[in-house]
Image 1: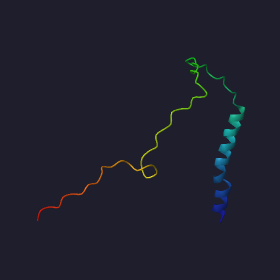
Image 2 (image 1 turned 90 degrees about the horizontal axis):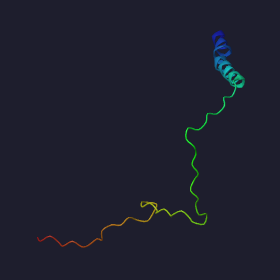
Image 3 (image 1 turned 90 degrees about the vertical axis):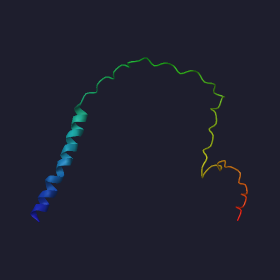
Image 4 (image 1 turned 180 degrees about the vertical axis):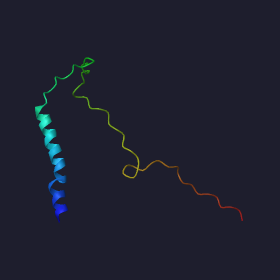
Length: 80
């Protein structure tokens, strides 16, 4: 019974102490200024607001239209 108490009161507190130290370190750290961009940002090409993007073709498969297959034809019977 004593070992369970020691385990609960000492060993399980280690992650809580670690979390407290990480939070303390994060609060005390001074923010670093952001680094300048290596390449200048290029402006995007103007796009017509009334023009819609081209429609995507639906995928074939069990949730779409059936795929094309060859037309079935009757086979001639084998001579006996």
